[in-house]
Length: 379
Image (cartoon, rainbow, N blue to C red; front, side, top):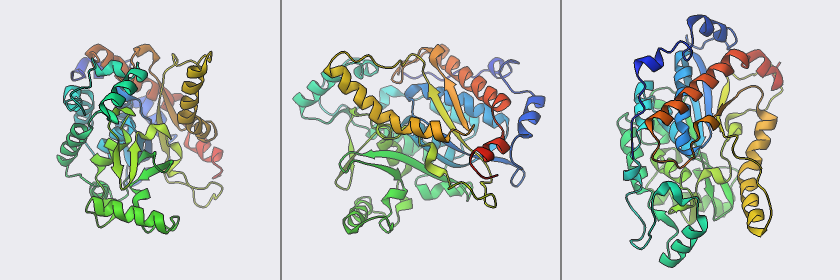
């Protein structure tokens, strides 16, 4: 169920795809001044399942511009991209890793031998059957996410990265944040920050809970939390993967509460003497086939309510906080679902090209640092 995307020389040398030197110069003229000789940026990645291959094309475009990443964040599948980018994998290696994921291995451990299902790609199309199956087997998810976590941990370890502390190994200014959903306490958590037992925002019980989590994982400091574990938690699709626990809290896919945390590194605006040194770009996957739902019965109403809860907050923040920094990658033409785990090489290449071309278009026709600062109230 895995095939490496064929980024052959012909594709990368396509005159219509890659940025020319003249185009690079034009784009650089609209960036802030380089820091230590480098154009820097922070990045936020939206979740999007296997369609995230389009992000590889976007990142290749950014690589062509020489952008060096500082602070990174993501939700669900976007957290995987952010984590591997934080590990400073060379772009060629990053493309190889993220486009050739072995889904057979990831879905190798069912939580019960009595869960009878076919292709995992189809499971989420029949949620009622999944619920019935899980009720009969007394399980909370069809698959264990242990193989997924173990693969992430092994891959990151090849770069000497295991914990959130480790990401500063390649750059002392680098940060990584991952969004998860705490469904026990009805809270959105940003890891590792929300594991800090000394946070002034917490009451006594909440501090005790955080301390218990650190003890559960044998940690002395919240920044020593495992990145692989955080990505596993953020990607735990309800019903699909068995939810894991942090202390007494069940944790699920961060996309339930914020699939596009564009706000995560924003600072208060309005101080022209203290503007940000570099931009924060948001990478967002758009599918125009996801039309507004028709509500004809109670089930339609329930489904639309869940969809609104998952997306309304992010859309509000994008509407009010876009400020010319969101790179919208329209993947409609690829005709790929988020769980199309048997994706062909041809469709992978199509997603990749869409990611590169639309990121290129953003930088050529929409990006302007001075205008961005003005919209944010810094000048």
